[in-house]
Length: 232
Image 1: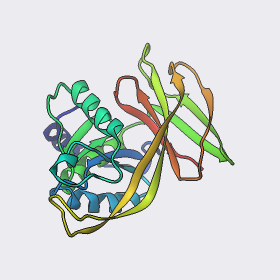
Image 2: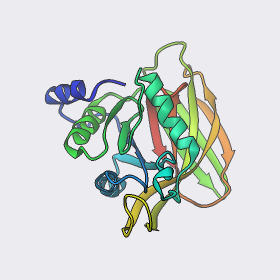
Image 3: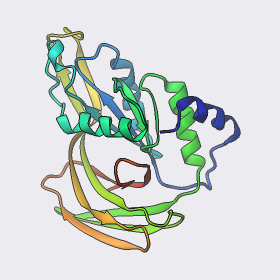
Image 4: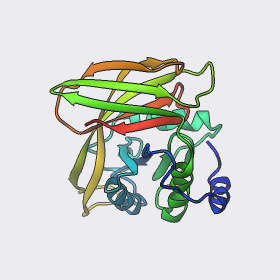
């Protein structure tokens, strides 16, 4: 990942343009009900969930469960994803709250100013690919088109389902006594396939329920997210 400080500096020279890429920016928040520092970042996720130009996803992790409260929405795979991002960036530690933007940059989740700057840089960048996704019943059709992708790279096509709002009444741990609402809580991931990025291609899959979903086109091994869209 590019260091946040470098992105903050770059943002001084990038002005988001309405003519830039139309793809929303993907912001993944790694959070936990057992983390006393997380509520400010969780509140930011509520704001991100209202934006059309951002796809906000809250991935609850389980590695704070030992403190005394088991996060009801945690999935061990979320911590594995966070660790994979860290390895890709050459980092040795993970933490909460952490936000990862388009699979490329990370910030402390409660740092709203720095997050806003990084989102602005990505919104001003030319799109590298386009993805669209439509749904009829349980059937999902995903179409991807390359614009400016490097040769030889491959991309995972992932469909992510989430709950727009979940509530928790926390009775133990660092947040004991708090009643909190969480936005865009990730409930499950499915792979639609792998794409070589060389030509337009269509993928199909079945989703088991009617939760809202988004599709991510991500370079293999947790590289950059090059395109994203809501399933309509």
